[in-house]
Length: 505
Ligand SMILES: Cc1ncc(COP(=O)(O)O)c(C=O)c1O
Image (cartoon, rainbow, N blue to C red; front, side, top):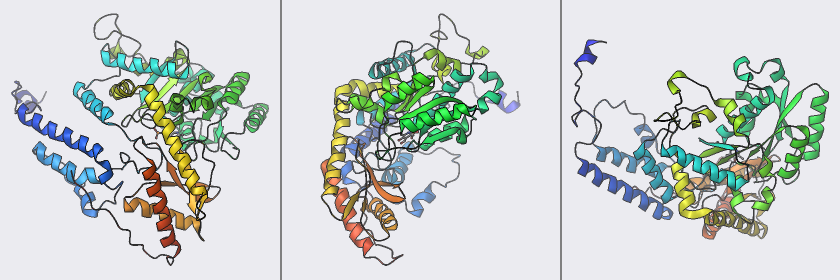
Protein backbone atom coordinates (compact mmCIF):
# COMPACT_ATOMS: atom_id res chain seq x y z
CA UNK A 1 0.00 0.00 0.00
CA UNK A 2 1.40 3.41 -0.81
CA UNK A 3 2.34 6.01 1.82
CA UNK A 4 -0.46 8.49 0.94
CA UNK A 5 -3.06 5.81 1.75
CA UNK A 6 -1.34 4.92 5.06
CA UNK A 7 -1.31 8.61 6.10
CA UNK A 8 -5.02 9.23 5.38
CA UNK A 9 -7.13 10.00 8.53
CA UNK A 10 -8.81 7.01 10.15
CA UNK A 11 -11.53 8.67 12.16
CA UNK A 12 -14.70 9.73 10.45
CA UNK A 13 -15.25 13.16 11.90
CA UNK A 14 -18.17 14.78 10.19
CA UNK A 15 -15.80 16.85 8.05
CA UNK A 16 -14.41 13.62 6.62
CA UNK A 17 -17.60 11.77 5.75
CA UNK A 18 -19.96 13.08 3.12
CA UNK A 19 -22.71 13.62 5.68
CA UNK A 20 -23.80 17.21 6.27
CA UNK A 21 -21.95 19.23 8.92
CA UNK A 22 -25.29 20.66 9.95
CA UNK A 23 -28.31 18.39 9.66
CA UNK A 24 -30.73 21.25 10.43
CA UNK A 25 -29.49 23.17 7.41
CA UNK A 26 -29.86 20.26 5.02
CA UNK A 27 -33.28 19.48 6.49
CA UNK A 28 -34.42 23.04 5.70
CA UNK A 29 -32.87 22.84 2.23
CA UNK A 30 -34.51 19.45 1.66
CA UNK A 31 -37.92 20.79 2.67
CA UNK A 32 -37.48 23.67 0.22
CA UNK A 33 -36.61 21.21 -2.56
CA UNK A 34 -39.59 19.03 -1.74
CA UNK A 35 -41.96 22.02 -1.67
CA UNK A 36 -40.56 23.26 -4.97
CA UNK A 37 -41.00 19.91 -6.70
CA UNK A 38 -44.54 19.54 -5.41
CA UNK A 39 -45.28 23.08 -6.64
CA UNK A 40 -43.69 22.15 -9.96
CA UNK A 41 -46.18 19.34 -10.47
CA UNK A 42 -49.13 21.25 -8.99
CA UNK A 43 -48.55 24.30 -11.23
CA UNK A 44 -47.23 22.52 -14.29
CA UNK A 45 -49.84 24.17 -16.54
CA UNK A 46 -48.22 27.57 -15.90
CA UNK A 47 -45.14 26.41 -17.77
CA UNK A 48 -44.48 25.79 -21.45
CA UNK A 49 -44.51 22.07 -22.24
CA UNK A 50 -40.98 22.30 -23.59
CA UNK A 51 -38.68 25.07 -24.65
CA UNK A 52 -35.58 25.21 -26.85
CA UNK A 53 -32.31 25.25 -24.90
CA UNK A 54 -30.37 28.51 -25.27
CA UNK A 55 -26.67 28.09 -26.07
CA UNK A 56 -25.60 29.62 -22.76
CA UNK A 57 -27.69 27.09 -20.83
CA UNK A 58 -26.17 24.20 -22.78
CA UNK A 59 -22.71 25.70 -22.22
CA UNK A 60 -23.34 25.63 -18.48
CA UNK A 61 -23.07 21.83 -18.69
CA UNK A 62 -19.69 21.91 -20.37
CA UNK A 63 -18.04 23.01 -17.10
CA UNK A 64 -14.78 21.64 -15.70
CA UNK A 65 -14.79 18.70 -13.28
CA UNK A 66 -15.47 20.29 -9.86
CA UNK A 67 -12.46 19.72 -7.58
CA UNK A 68 -13.68 21.90 -4.73
CA UNK A 69 -16.91 21.67 -2.73
CA UNK A 70 -19.86 23.91 -3.58
CA UNK A 71 -22.64 24.86 -1.20
CA UNK A 72 -25.72 22.66 -1.72
CA UNK A 73 -27.99 25.72 -1.94
CA UNK A 74 -25.90 27.04 -4.80
CA UNK A 75 -25.95 23.73 -6.68
CA UNK A 76 -29.71 23.63 -6.16
CA UNK A 77 -30.03 27.13 -7.63
CA UNK A 78 -28.28 25.85 -10.76
CA UNK A 79 -30.84 23.04 -10.86
CA UNK A 80 -33.77 25.46 -10.63
CA UNK A 81 -32.30 27.91 -13.15
CA UNK A 82 -30.69 25.66 -15.72
CA UNK A 83 -32.28 22.22 -15.46
CA UNK A 84 -35.93 22.61 -14.44
CA UNK A 85 -36.98 25.01 -17.23
CA UNK A 86 -35.39 22.82 -19.91
CA UNK A 87 -36.63 19.34 -18.96
CA UNK A 88 -38.34 16.99 -21.46
CA UNK A 89 -41.81 18.25 -20.62
CA UNK A 90 -43.57 14.93 -20.08
CA UNK A 91 -44.88 15.98 -16.67
CA UNK A 92 -46.97 18.54 -18.56
CA UNK A 93 -50.46 17.51 -19.74
CA UNK A 94 -49.69 18.97 -23.18
CA UNK A 95 -46.94 16.42 -23.78
CA UNK A 96 -48.18 13.92 -26.38
CA UNK A 97 -44.98 12.89 -28.13
CA UNK A 98 -43.55 9.38 -28.41
CA UNK A 99 -44.88 7.29 -25.46
CA UNK A 100 -44.07 9.10 -22.22
CA UNK A 101 -45.74 8.69 -18.84
CA UNK A 102 -46.41 11.77 -16.72
CA UNK A 103 -45.19 10.55 -13.32
CA UNK A 104 -46.98 11.34 -10.07
CA UNK A 105 -46.22 13.12 -6.79
CA UNK A 106 -46.62 9.74 -5.07
CA UNK A 107 -44.00 8.15 -7.33
CA UNK A 108 -41.67 11.09 -6.77
CA UNK A 109 -41.90 10.76 -2.99
CA UNK A 110 -41.34 7.01 -3.21
CA UNK A 111 -38.25 7.58 -5.35
CA UNK A 112 -36.87 9.85 -2.64
CA UNK A 113 -37.52 7.18 -0.01
CA UNK A 114 -35.81 4.57 -2.19
CA UNK A 115 -32.75 6.80 -2.53
CA UNK A 116 -32.74 7.24 1.24
CA UNK A 117 -32.63 3.48 1.80
CA UNK A 118 -30.06 3.14 -0.98
CA UNK A 119 -30.94 -0.54 -1.30
CA UNK A 120 -29.15 -2.74 -3.83
CA UNK A 121 -31.66 -5.22 -5.24
CA UNK A 122 -29.20 -7.51 -6.98
CA UNK A 123 -29.65 -9.98 -4.16
CA UNK A 124 -29.33 -10.85 -0.45
CA UNK A 125 -32.04 -11.16 2.17
CA UNK A 126 -33.80 -7.84 2.80
CA UNK A 127 -37.32 -6.50 2.53
CA UNK A 128 -36.78 -4.32 -0.57
CA UNK A 129 -36.41 -7.61 -2.50
CA UNK A 130 -39.67 -8.83 -0.99
CA UNK A 131 -41.28 -5.63 -2.28
CA UNK A 132 -40.05 -6.47 -5.78
CA UNK A 133 -41.34 -10.04 -5.34
CA UNK A 134 -44.68 -8.57 -4.32
CA UNK A 135 -44.84 -6.64 -7.61
CA UNK A 136 -43.88 -9.83 -9.49
CA UNK A 137 -46.78 -11.61 -7.79
CA UNK A 138 -49.23 -8.78 -8.49
CA UNK A 139 -48.11 -8.64 -12.13
CA UNK A 140 -48.50 -12.42 -12.39
CA UNK A 141 -52.07 -12.07 -11.13
CA UNK A 142 -52.78 -9.15 -13.46
CA UNK A 143 -51.84 -11.21 -16.51
CA UNK A 144 -53.18 -14.55 -15.31
CA UNK A 145 -49.76 -16.25 -15.38
CA UNK A 146 -49.29 -19.50 -13.43
CA UNK A 147 -47.50 -19.90 -10.10
CA UNK A 148 -43.82 -20.38 -10.89
CA UNK A 149 -43.74 -17.42 -13.26
CA UNK A 150 -40.87 -15.02 -12.65
CA UNK A 151 -40.45 -11.31 -13.13
CA UNK A 152 -37.87 -8.60 -12.79
CA UNK A 153 -37.60 -4.83 -13.03
CA UNK A 154 -35.31 -3.51 -15.76
CA UNK A 155 -34.69 -0.10 -17.29
CA UNK A 156 -37.37 -0.34 -19.96
CA UNK A 157 -39.08 -2.52 -22.53
CA UNK A 158 -36.09 -2.39 -24.90
CA UNK A 159 -34.09 -4.25 -22.25
CA UNK A 160 -37.00 -6.53 -21.34
CA UNK A 161 -37.45 -7.50 -25.01
CA UNK A 162 -33.73 -8.24 -25.33
CA UNK A 163 -33.86 -10.42 -22.24
CA UNK A 164 -36.93 -12.24 -23.59
CA UNK A 165 -35.07 -13.01 -26.83
CA UNK A 166 -32.25 -14.47 -24.73
CA UNK A 167 -34.65 -16.60 -22.66
CA UNK A 168 -36.28 -17.86 -25.88
CA UNK A 169 -32.81 -18.63 -27.26
CA UNK A 170 -31.93 -20.70 -24.17
CA UNK A 171 -35.27 -22.50 -24.43
CA UNK A 172 -34.55 -23.33 -28.08
CA UNK A 173 -30.90 -24.33 -27.82
CA UNK A 174 -30.65 -25.57 -24.24
CA UNK A 175 -28.61 -24.24 -21.35
CA UNK A 176 -25.34 -25.24 -23.01
CA UNK A 177 -25.73 -22.28 -25.38
CA UNK A 178 -24.37 -20.20 -22.52
CA UNK A 179 -21.03 -22.01 -22.64
CA UNK A 180 -20.75 -22.78 -26.34
CA UNK A 181 -22.51 -19.85 -27.97
CA UNK A 182 -25.24 -20.17 -30.57
CA UNK A 183 -23.04 -22.14 -33.01
CA UNK A 184 -24.30 -23.58 -36.29
CA UNK A 185 -27.71 -24.46 -34.89
CA UNK A 186 -28.18 -20.88 -33.67
CA UNK A 187 -27.32 -19.59 -37.13
CA UNK A 188 -30.45 -21.30 -38.45
CA UNK A 189 -32.83 -19.89 -35.81
CA UNK A 190 -35.42 -17.44 -37.09
CA UNK A 191 -37.82 -15.12 -35.24
CA UNK A 192 -41.01 -13.39 -36.35
CA UNK A 193 -42.75 -10.14 -35.66
CA UNK A 194 -44.72 -7.59 -37.67
CA UNK A 195 -43.55 -4.64 -39.75
CA UNK A 196 -45.27 -2.44 -37.13
CA UNK A 197 -43.19 -3.82 -34.24
CA UNK A 198 -40.88 -1.53 -32.30
CA UNK A 199 -37.31 -1.27 -33.58
CA UNK A 200 -35.91 -2.62 -30.32
CA UNK A 201 -36.99 -6.15 -31.35
CA UNK A 202 -34.68 -6.07 -34.34
CA UNK A 203 -31.98 -4.52 -32.15
CA UNK A 204 -32.45 -7.34 -29.64
CA UNK A 205 -31.92 -9.95 -32.38
CA UNK A 206 -28.79 -8.09 -33.40
CA UNK A 207 -27.41 -7.84 -29.83
CA UNK A 208 -28.30 -11.45 -29.07
CA UNK A 209 -26.03 -12.53 -31.91
CA UNK A 210 -28.67 -13.80 -34.35
CA UNK A 211 -28.45 -10.74 -36.58
CA UNK A 212 -31.45 -8.63 -37.47
CA UNK A 213 -31.86 -10.52 -40.77
CA UNK A 214 -32.98 -13.54 -38.74
CA UNK A 215 -36.06 -11.52 -37.76
CA UNK A 216 -38.87 -11.84 -40.30
CA UNK A 217 -41.08 -8.76 -40.31
CA UNK A 218 -44.50 -9.96 -41.42
CA UNK A 219 -47.01 -7.70 -43.17
CA UNK A 220 -49.83 -6.04 -41.23
CA UNK A 221 -53.45 -5.36 -42.10
CA UNK A 222 -54.98 -1.88 -42.45
CA UNK A 223 -55.19 -1.63 -38.67
CA UNK A 224 -51.50 -2.54 -38.30
CA UNK A 225 -52.23 -5.99 -36.82
CA UNK A 226 -49.94 -8.79 -37.89
CA UNK A 227 -51.29 -10.92 -40.75
CA UNK A 228 -51.44 -14.29 -38.98
CA UNK A 229 -51.96 -16.28 -42.20
CA UNK A 230 -48.86 -14.66 -43.73
CA UNK A 231 -46.96 -15.41 -40.52
CA UNK A 232 -47.94 -19.07 -40.66
CA UNK A 233 -46.95 -19.27 -44.33
CA UNK A 234 -43.53 -17.75 -43.61
CA UNK A 235 -42.87 -20.15 -40.74
CA UNK A 236 -43.68 -23.10 -43.00
CA UNK A 237 -41.48 -21.68 -45.77
CA UNK A 238 -38.56 -21.24 -43.38
CA UNK A 239 -38.95 -24.75 -41.95
CA UNK A 240 -39.02 -26.16 -45.49
CA UNK A 241 -35.77 -24.29 -46.16
CA UNK A 242 -34.14 -26.07 -43.19
CA UNK A 243 -34.34 -23.10 -40.84
CA UNK A 244 -35.52 -23.35 -37.22
CA UNK A 245 -38.26 -20.90 -36.25
CA UNK A 246 -38.06 -20.33 -32.47
CA UNK A 247 -39.79 -17.08 -31.51
CA UNK A 248 -42.82 -14.94 -32.34
CA UNK A 249 -43.08 -11.43 -30.91
CA UNK A 250 -46.59 -10.00 -30.82
CA UNK A 251 -47.37 -6.36 -30.10
CA UNK A 252 -49.87 -5.19 -27.50
CA UNK A 253 -49.98 -1.55 -28.60
CA UNK A 254 -47.75 -0.74 -31.57
CA UNK A 255 -45.67 2.36 -31.20
CA UNK A 256 -46.97 4.11 -34.34
CA UNK A 257 -50.73 3.80 -34.00
CA UNK A 258 -51.51 1.61 -30.98
CA UNK A 259 -52.56 -1.59 -32.75
CA UNK A 260 -52.98 -4.77 -30.74
CA UNK A 261 -52.14 -7.99 -32.57
CA UNK A 262 -54.56 -10.89 -32.39
CA UNK A 263 -52.78 -12.32 -29.36
CA UNK A 264 -55.11 -15.29 -29.10
CA UNK A 265 -54.42 -16.37 -32.68
CA UNK A 266 -50.69 -15.84 -32.15
CA UNK A 267 -50.70 -17.89 -28.96
CA UNK A 268 -52.52 -20.73 -30.71
CA UNK A 269 -50.13 -20.65 -33.64
CA UNK A 270 -47.13 -20.67 -31.30
CA UNK A 271 -48.52 -23.60 -29.33
CA UNK A 272 -49.16 -25.56 -32.51
CA UNK A 273 -45.74 -24.74 -33.97
CA UNK A 274 -43.94 -25.03 -30.61
CA UNK A 275 -42.55 -21.51 -30.74
CA UNK A 276 -41.79 -19.14 -27.87
CA UNK A 277 -44.53 -16.50 -27.76
CA UNK A 278 -43.31 -13.15 -26.45
CA UNK A 279 -45.50 -10.04 -26.24
CA UNK A 280 -44.10 -6.52 -26.43
CA UNK A 281 -46.61 -4.79 -24.21
CA UNK A 282 -44.45 -1.72 -23.55
CA UNK A 283 -47.40 0.51 -22.83
CA UNK A 284 -50.40 -1.51 -24.02
CA UNK A 285 -50.09 -4.46 -21.64
CA UNK A 286 -51.27 -2.34 -18.71
CA UNK A 287 -54.49 -1.85 -20.68
CA UNK A 288 -55.38 -5.07 -18.84
CA UNK A 289 -56.35 -2.80 -15.91
CA UNK A 290 -59.03 -1.12 -18.01
CA UNK A 291 -62.27 -3.16 -18.18
CA UNK A 292 -62.90 -1.54 -21.57
CA UNK A 293 -59.55 -2.65 -23.02
CA UNK A 294 -58.87 -5.96 -21.25
CA UNK A 295 -60.96 -8.08 -23.68
CA UNK A 296 -58.82 -6.82 -26.55
CA UNK A 297 -55.75 -8.27 -24.85
CA UNK A 298 -57.20 -11.79 -24.79
CA UNK A 299 -54.41 -14.28 -25.42
CA UNK A 300 -51.86 -12.32 -23.39
CA UNK A 301 -52.39 -14.83 -20.58
CA UNK A 302 -50.94 -17.54 -22.84
CA UNK A 303 -47.71 -15.68 -23.62
CA UNK A 304 -44.39 -17.25 -22.63
CA UNK A 305 -43.11 -13.80 -21.70
CA UNK A 306 -44.34 -10.21 -21.57
CA UNK A 307 -42.30 -6.99 -21.64
CA UNK A 308 -43.91 -3.84 -20.25
CA UNK A 309 -43.18 -0.48 -18.71
CA UNK A 310 -44.76 0.77 -15.51
CA UNK A 311 -43.33 4.18 -16.46
CA UNK A 312 -45.68 4.61 -19.42
CA UNK A 313 -49.42 4.09 -18.80
CA UNK A 314 -48.61 3.08 -15.20
CA UNK A 315 -47.33 6.64 -14.54
CA UNK A 316 -44.48 5.39 -12.32
CA UNK A 317 -41.56 7.84 -12.64
CA UNK A 318 -38.77 6.73 -14.98
CA UNK A 319 -37.54 4.11 -15.15
CA UNK A 320 -39.60 1.02 -14.36
CA UNK A 321 -39.48 -1.54 -17.18
CA UNK A 322 -40.49 -5.11 -16.40
CA UNK A 323 -40.09 -8.60 -17.81
CA UNK A 324 -42.41 -11.43 -16.82
CA UNK A 325 -41.63 -15.03 -17.84
CA UNK A 326 -44.19 -17.81 -17.62
CA UNK A 327 -41.64 -20.50 -16.71
CA UNK A 328 -39.34 -19.11 -14.03
CA UNK A 329 -36.91 -22.03 -14.44
CA UNK A 330 -36.25 -21.10 -18.06
CA UNK A 331 -35.71 -17.52 -16.95
CA UNK A 332 -33.16 -18.54 -14.30
CA UNK A 333 -31.49 -20.95 -16.75
CA UNK A 334 -30.75 -17.98 -18.97
CA UNK A 335 -29.15 -15.65 -16.46
CA UNK A 336 -28.13 -17.35 -13.20
CA UNK A 337 -24.35 -17.50 -12.89
CA UNK A 338 -22.87 -18.76 -9.60
CA UNK A 339 -19.83 -16.98 -8.20
CA UNK A 340 -17.85 -17.57 -5.00
CA UNK A 341 -18.43 -14.01 -3.81
CA UNK A 342 -22.20 -14.40 -4.35
CA UNK A 343 -22.50 -17.64 -2.37
CA UNK A 344 -26.01 -18.32 -1.08
CA UNK A 345 -26.73 -19.31 2.51
CA UNK A 346 -29.82 -20.59 4.29
CA UNK A 347 -29.58 -17.90 6.98
CA UNK A 348 -27.91 -14.53 7.42
CA UNK A 349 -27.81 -11.73 4.87
CA UNK A 350 -26.82 -14.05 2.02
CA UNK A 351 -30.03 -16.11 2.36
CA UNK A 352 -33.19 -15.71 0.31
CA UNK A 353 -32.07 -17.28 -2.97
CA UNK A 354 -32.97 -17.05 -5.77
CA UNK A 355 -31.94 -13.44 -6.18
CA UNK A 356 -32.91 -10.95 -8.87
CA UNK A 357 -29.37 -11.11 -10.29
CA UNK A 358 -30.28 -14.70 -11.33
CA UNK A 359 -32.96 -13.28 -13.62
CA UNK A 360 -31.07 -10.71 -15.64
CA UNK A 361 -27.69 -9.28 -16.57
CA UNK A 362 -27.56 -6.71 -13.73
CA UNK A 363 -25.98 -7.33 -10.35
CA UNK A 364 -26.31 -3.86 -8.83
CA UNK A 365 -29.93 -2.80 -9.14
CA UNK A 366 -31.91 0.08 -7.67
CA UNK A 367 -35.24 -0.08 -5.83
CA UNK A 368 -37.57 0.52 -8.82
CA UNK A 369 -40.09 -1.69 -7.10
CA UNK A 370 -40.75 0.85 -4.33
CA UNK A 371 -42.18 3.59 -6.56
CA UNK A 372 -44.25 0.94 -8.35
CA UNK A 373 -45.49 -0.50 -5.03
CA UNK A 374 -46.46 2.97 -3.81
CA UNK A 375 -48.23 3.68 -7.12
CA UNK A 376 -50.21 0.43 -7.16
CA UNK A 377 -51.16 0.66 -3.49
CA UNK A 378 -51.93 4.37 -3.35
CA UNK A 379 -54.09 4.51 -6.45
CA UNK A 380 -55.25 0.92 -6.73
CA UNK A 381 -55.62 -0.88 -10.05
CA UNK A 382 -59.24 0.27 -10.56
CA UNK A 383 -58.29 3.92 -10.52
CA UNK A 384 -55.28 3.29 -12.74
CA UNK A 385 -57.50 1.36 -15.14
CA UNK A 386 -60.01 4.23 -15.23
CA UNK A 387 -57.19 6.66 -16.00
CA UNK A 388 -56.03 4.42 -18.88
CA UNK A 389 -59.60 4.26 -20.22
CA UNK A 390 -59.82 8.06 -20.05
CA UNK A 391 -56.67 8.55 -22.14
CA UNK A 392 -58.30 6.42 -24.85
CA UNK A 393 -61.51 8.47 -24.58
CA UNK A 394 -59.42 11.62 -25.11
CA UNK A 395 -57.87 10.03 -28.21
CA UNK A 396 -61.40 9.27 -29.48
CA UNK A 397 -62.36 12.91 -28.82
CA UNK A 398 -59.35 14.08 -30.83
CA UNK A 399 -60.32 11.70 -33.64
CA UNK A 400 -63.89 13.10 -33.68
CA UNK A 401 -62.63 16.66 -33.87
CA UNK A 402 -60.21 15.80 -36.71
CA UNK A 403 -62.98 14.09 -38.70
CA UNK A 404 -65.14 17.20 -38.31
CA UNK A 405 -62.41 19.54 -39.54
CA UNK A 406 -61.96 19.66 -43.35
CA UNK A 407 -58.46 21.13 -43.03
CA UNK A 408 -57.30 17.97 -41.23
CA UNK A 409 -56.98 14.36 -42.31
CA UNK A 410 -56.89 11.26 -40.10
CA UNK A 411 -54.03 8.98 -41.24
CA UNK A 412 -54.75 5.82 -39.25
CA UNK A 413 -57.64 4.26 -37.38
CA UNK A 414 -57.63 5.24 -33.70
CA UNK A 415 -57.59 2.00 -31.72
CA UNK A 416 -56.14 2.95 -28.37
CA UNK A 417 -54.63 6.23 -27.18
CA UNK A 418 -52.65 7.26 -30.27
CA UNK A 419 -53.90 9.57 -33.02
CA UNK A 420 -52.05 10.12 -36.31
CA UNK A 421 -53.25 12.91 -38.56
CA UNK A 422 -52.07 15.76 -40.73
CA UNK A 423 -52.87 19.22 -41.94
CA UNK A 424 -53.93 19.12 -45.60
CA UNK A 425 -51.40 21.05 -47.66
CA UNK A 426 -49.30 20.93 -50.77
CA UNK A 427 -45.91 19.49 -49.72
CA UNK A 428 -47.73 18.02 -46.74
CA UNK A 429 -44.73 16.12 -45.33
CA UNK A 430 -42.66 19.29 -45.05
CA UNK A 431 -45.52 21.41 -43.76
CA UNK A 432 -46.58 18.88 -41.11
CA UNK A 433 -43.00 18.28 -39.96
CA UNK A 434 -42.65 22.05 -39.51
CA UNK A 435 -46.00 22.31 -37.73
CA UNK A 436 -44.85 19.78 -35.12
CA UNK A 437 -41.60 21.62 -34.49
CA UNK A 438 -43.44 24.97 -34.35
CA UNK A 439 -45.86 23.61 -31.76
CA UNK A 440 -43.05 22.11 -29.69
CA UNK A 441 -41.15 25.43 -29.79
CA UNK A 442 -44.28 27.41 -28.90
CA UNK A 443 -44.55 25.47 -25.62
CA UNK A 444 -48.29 24.86 -26.25
CA UNK A 445 -48.04 21.10 -26.72
CA UNK A 446 -45.50 18.45 -27.68
CA UNK A 447 -46.72 15.98 -30.31
CA UNK A 448 -44.15 13.94 -32.27
CA UNK A 449 -44.16 12.56 -35.82
CA UNK A 450 -44.12 9.24 -37.60
CA UNK A 451 -44.28 8.13 -41.21
CA UNK A 452 -47.30 6.09 -42.35
CA UNK A 453 -47.28 4.87 -45.96
CA UNK A 454 -44.75 7.56 -46.82
CA UNK A 455 -46.90 10.30 -45.29
CA UNK A 456 -45.56 12.26 -42.37
CA UNK A 457 -48.11 12.18 -39.56
CA UNK A 458 -48.56 14.41 -36.57
CA UNK A 459 -48.68 11.83 -33.81
CA UNK A 460 -50.41 12.46 -30.49
CA UNK A 461 -50.03 9.69 -27.89
CA UNK A 462 -52.24 10.46 -24.91
CA UNK A 463 -50.37 8.73 -22.10
CA UNK A 464 -50.23 11.40 -19.39
CA UNK A 465 -52.91 11.11 -16.69
CA UNK A 466 -53.05 14.93 -16.46
CA UNK A 467 -54.07 15.42 -20.09
CA UNK A 468 -57.57 16.83 -20.44
CA UNK A 469 -59.95 17.84 -23.23
CA UNK A 470 -58.60 21.41 -23.05
CA UNK A 471 -55.13 20.09 -23.95
CA UNK A 472 -56.56 18.31 -26.99
CA UNK A 473 -58.30 21.56 -27.99
CA UNK A 474 -55.06 23.52 -27.53
CA UNK A 475 -53.18 21.01 -29.72
CA UNK A 476 -55.78 21.24 -32.46
CA UNK A 477 -55.92 25.04 -32.52
CA UNK A 478 -52.12 25.11 -32.64
CA UNK A 479 -52.09 22.68 -35.60
CA UNK A 480 -54.66 24.79 -37.45
CA UNK A 481 -52.92 28.04 -36.62
CA UNK A 482 -49.40 26.94 -37.53
CA UNK A 483 -50.78 24.96 -40.48
CA UNK A 484 -52.35 28.11 -41.96
CA UNK A 485 -49.16 30.08 -41.40
CA UNK A 486 -46.92 27.32 -42.78
CA UNK A 487 -49.08 26.81 -45.88
CA UNK A 488 -48.85 30.49 -46.69
CA UNK A 489 -45.07 30.66 -46.00
CA UNK A 490 -42.57 30.74 -48.83
CA UNK A 491 -40.21 27.77 -48.87
CA UNK A 492 -37.48 28.17 -46.30
CA UNK A 493 -39.06 31.18 -44.62
CA UNK A 494 -38.47 31.17 -40.88
CA UNK A 495 -41.67 31.47 -38.88
CA UNK A 496 -41.43 33.64 -35.84
CA UNK A 497 -42.83 31.32 -33.19
CA UNK A 498 -44.01 33.09 -30.09
CA UNK A 499 -42.54 31.37 -27.05
CA UNK A 500 -43.55 31.46 -23.45
CA UNK A 501 -40.93 32.94 -21.13
CA UNK A 502 -38.89 30.50 -19.00
CA UNK A 503 -40.17 30.01 -15.50
CA UNK A 504 -37.52 29.27 -12.90
CA UNK A 505 -38.70 27.79 -9.62
C1 LIG B 1 -44.29 -0.86 -28.46
C2 LIG B 1 -43.01 -0.41 -27.82
N1 LIG B 1 -42.04 -1.32 -27.61
C3 LIG B 1 -40.88 -0.98 -27.04
C4 LIG B 1 -40.64 0.30 -26.63
C5 LIG B 1 -39.34 0.64 -25.98
O1 LIG B 1 -39.55 0.85 -24.61
P1 LIG B 1 -38.50 1.60 -23.70
O2 LIG B 1 -38.44 3.00 -24.24
O3 LIG B 1 -39.04 1.56 -22.32
O4 LIG B 1 -37.20 0.90 -23.84
C6 LIG B 1 -41.61 1.29 -26.83
C7 LIG B 1 -41.38 2.67 -26.46
O5 LIG B 1 -42.19 3.54 -26.64
C8 LIG B 1 -42.84 0.91 -27.43
O6 LIG B 1 -43.83 1.79 -27.63
